[in-house]
Image (spheres, rainbow, N blue to C red):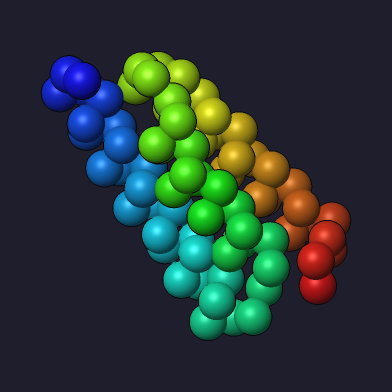
Length: 72
């Protein structure tokens, strides 16, 4: 593990925690599950680049799902 992976893991876990807390407090399933998936992705991705791509895709998916009204 190098420092880039450590920093990316810390950043994306913090963003995922924010989504999870927001989803729980607002009783919204999509942000909460997306945040938990983002936290989980930091454990399974090997490099900072892959972790950032997966987290970016999850953020886009959360945005798309909330705009479409999925999980309301």
